[in-house]
Length: 101
Image 1: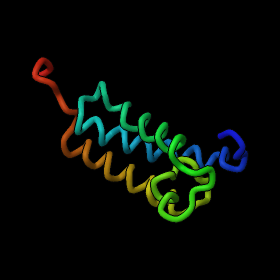
Image 2: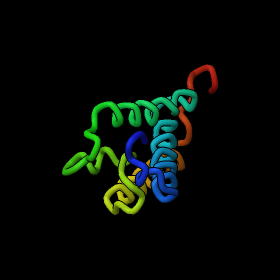
Image 3: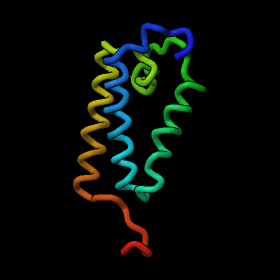
C-alpha cells in the first residue's frame, strides 16, 4: 500500500487472503461462480477509494484490508467472513444457472 510500509507484512497478507476467500466463497453461493470474484474486487477497490488513510472508529471494521497485520478487529472480521462464506458455500454450493442444471 502506498505510504504504509508497515501494512505490507505477512500477517496482513494472510489475513486478507483468508477474509477475501470467504467473501468469494459466499459470493459463489449467492451469485454464479463465474461472477464470484467481483464482490471482493469491488470491496477492496471501494475501501481504497473511500476509506481514510488511517482508518479509525467504525472504519477499522469495514476497512480491514488496510489494517496492519496484528490488528485484532481486522482478524476478527476476516475470520468471520471466512467462516460465513465457506459455511454458506458448503451448505448451498455454487449457484447454477438453468443452462448448467
